[in-house]
Each structure stands twice: as C-alpha cells, then as structure tokens.
Length: 421
Image (cartoon, rainbow, N blue to C red):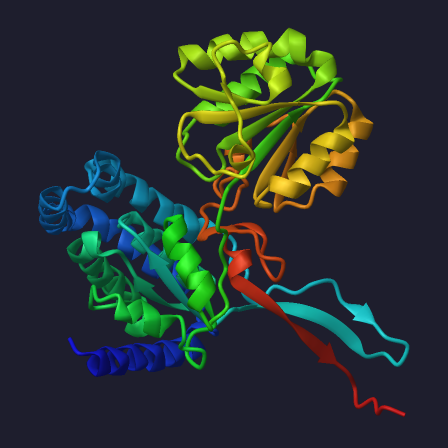
C-alpha cells in the first residue's frame, strides 16, 4: 500500500468510527450486553476457524524467530478462547456506567446541578502480539458506549481480523453499528503514524505494548494518550512490619510473574529490621532464581548479591532481578520512591497505622498499597472486571482503567425558567 492510500484508508476508518460513536452514545445497555454475549457464543462456535487463522500467525512467527514467551502470548489455545469468552460474559453483566448521575445539588435559585457519565467517543488501541487484547479492548469500549479502532501487531494479523469479523457479527446481531469496532487492515507502520495524529476523529489513544512502542507514541502522538511508560514498583518494609508477612509479600510481589508491570523492582527495608529480614529473604530469592542487586549496607547481609548501580534503582527489570536498599526512615524511603518511581504502584508493609496513612497520602503513584504485594495492580483484581490498561497520567483516569475510566462526565443543569441577574 502507498502512503497516500494508507492515509486515505485511515481517514475513512476515522470517519466511520466518529459516526458510530454518535450512535453508541445512546445505545441501550441491553443491546450492548447482547452484542457481547453473541461474541462470547461466537468464540465457541467458530473455534476451529479462529484457531486455523491463528495457526497461520504462529507459523509465520516461528519462522521469523519470535521468542517462545511471545509465541505463547500469540497462541489462541482452547484455554485462551474460554478465558476470552468468560471475560465477555463478565463485562456484559457489569453495570453500565453511561448515563449515571452524580448526587444533585440545588443552588439558592432552585437550579439543580449534577454530572452525567458519557463515553469518551472514539478510542484508538495500538497493541502488540496478543490477540486477546482485540476482544478485551473491544468489549470494554463497547460496553462503555465508545467506538474503537484497533491496530494490533503484525504477528497476530490473521487472528485479529478473524476476531474482528466475529465482533462485527455480534454488533450487527444487536442492531449496533458494525463500524463501532474496526480493525486496521494493514501491517504497515505508517498506519500507526496516521492514527496518532487523527485529532478530529480519535479522542484518545491507548497503547498496549513494550516500552519502545509507548516511548515512540509519547514522543510523536498528537492525540492524547492513556498510558504508562514504566512499572518501576517499590515495596517498603517499615520498622513496624510483621516480618513473616513482609517475607511472603516480597516473594509474591517479585515472583508471581516477573514480566508484568506490577512486579516489584526495588525493595526498601528499614534498618531496624534489615538484619532480621534480609538474610532470610536472600535465601528465599536465591532458591527461586532471583538475582539481587544491593546497596553497600545490604551487601553485608546478602552475600550472594551484586552491588547495585544508580541505574538499577531506576530500572524496570521485567525479569528475575531485584534491587535492594536499606533506609533509615519512612521519609528516606519516600524520598527514594519520589526520585526513582515511575508512579505506577508502591506498597508499605507495616503494622503502624500512622506510617501507613502517611505513605498512602504522601506517595504520589497511581496505586498505593498497605500490606499487599504490588502484583495486585490489575483491573480484574480491583473489581473492574477487566482493564484497557494502566494509566500513570495526571488527567482523567489513573491506575487500572476499566469501564468507568473509559467515560467522562458532563454537567447537567435543570431549572424552571430561572434567569441570571
């Protein structure tokens, strides 16, 4: 495809999405749920076809040397399809945020003032080799009354288009516009460049992918982004921590899944409990194959650790590697977090209510925990049903973004003819 034809095609997708968004704004909750349930049924009824298309992607990806972990993400196994169908049914059953009203206040002149939740409009999703995102993103955008344009990775091209056709059938069966969910029909990267500059037709872009992709979009996009760049997450073990609890939380935070954005990357330990806790943790992490990179004071208690560098404190490892530092106080821990954190997720382990309260009030990240591992950073775990992503933005949604995060509020005023004097 030529650059001009890609530009023309993307403009048409944008025009169709904007038209669909106007209809979706007033779509009933029943129609949206019906579409989602039809899609869930379609995943079972069309399983053979979906897996045949997925096999084409897997074969090409294997020939191109895609890493085993990415191949596993790409595969539409029976379990993956069942999980996707369960997610669709779960989202269908969730309360519809569109049209919900805040508490109404009455002004002295009798005028009534409230706010109503409305869809964002048109959402562009740019993501890499996980075809399940096609279903998850479409479902969340649909239920929240938005239109969406999906641009998946080239590795999942055939899978994504097969899923896109299934989504279209679900929309049409419920009487909703087929263009409410559109899959970009090219693997050319020029389509991404077009999407991120379509300010008249796309209201927000949600990137789902590696740091390189998100860094590029953050640099070049003209459409606002709902994104996070890094997940450099911290746990601070306070002087008043229950050390058995601290041990188990730290292990879970690092080893539940090293490659997720909520994995703990730095462990901060109060000097008052370091001698009692760190040798035990060091042994446990060694048995689990986690490499420790420690400050000079920690090295004395962790003989198998490597010296930490300044770069280690700022790194999202996404691997079985953990930076460890001893600090003298809660304030020093919070200073470290303020300097190095990516404002994703932080946690304090303590039995001191005052320390817990200060930590949650003063640490400026999108999620701040007490006595919990950072790997809980996930929309499903928050009770959101699913998430479109995790945002570290300071405007609109912050943290895991579910249905409510895909809406905004408008002011609704009512009166009986009052005049401003």
